[in-house]
Image (cartoon, rainbow, N blue to C red):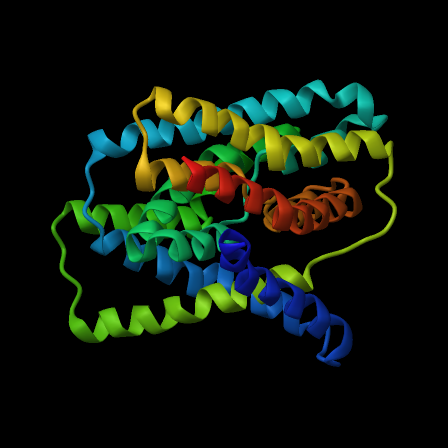
Length: 299
């Protein structure tokens, strides 16, 4: 029950976002604008601030990054193995496959803060920031017919990658934030999680999955149960426990990223099917993340 209560405030914000999108009468242009504000301004401020202030030890954090990347690679392979279940054209399948391994950073930061406070936020921020380029490389490469030039552009303009690299560089250079700048970034960071979760809720979409339902359900199973199972199994074997074990398992258990829909639409993919998978993994994560949190609490 305690772990369920831990999830309740954040998933309540997602539900509130879904309700506001349908009943508040806000113009449709409001929600894309809010998502852009969070994605390009508020969330990068949170990542930079967290990484600029955390105590970094590359040797200690490297095993966590290895577990995170390994769980993503396993999810990619497992998702790929489900292709015969889909009954889809190659581009539509590639669009949906990204939902097996891409992760919702907004939810991850919110849960990490509840588990381990500022240290949890910084650790999850660092892990997500390092994994974002790999997730983007895999997703864009799947859908790009002439991927390399386009892939580089995607990475160079990704605000989460840029904020992560800037925060790490500032930290490693021994930089100290002036108090007014620190307070400004803190106010932006405080707004990022709540508004980000509202935007996630507003983006939930339902309808026909297209293709075979069994294929879509396989992607949901890979993302919510099999990917975190890999992290759960691998973490102790690489010496991870406590905070780092909790963070890497919950990272692997995150629902699919809403940015997967944006990428699918921008590259001419199956936006409708991706939107269904994002919605299904987000709602399914209420139960699956509770199970993983309970398992972590039990040791």
